[in-house]
Length: 58
Image (cartoon, rainbow, N blue to C red; front, side):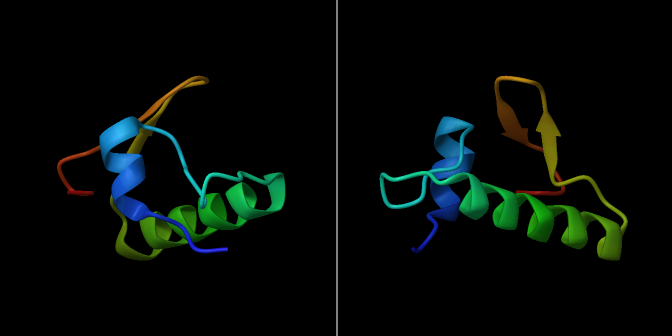
């Protein structure tokens, strides 16, 4: 299943080929968290309902 990174930027949600599965979302979340930790920047602002891309994430 392929992710669409632009989808997150435009909609604020993960979209995985129209079929979101928990394991896929968890994988994407973990990869983003790993990038944030590695580069010591915050890529996304997260709330319980939405996400938005930070300036560093753009």
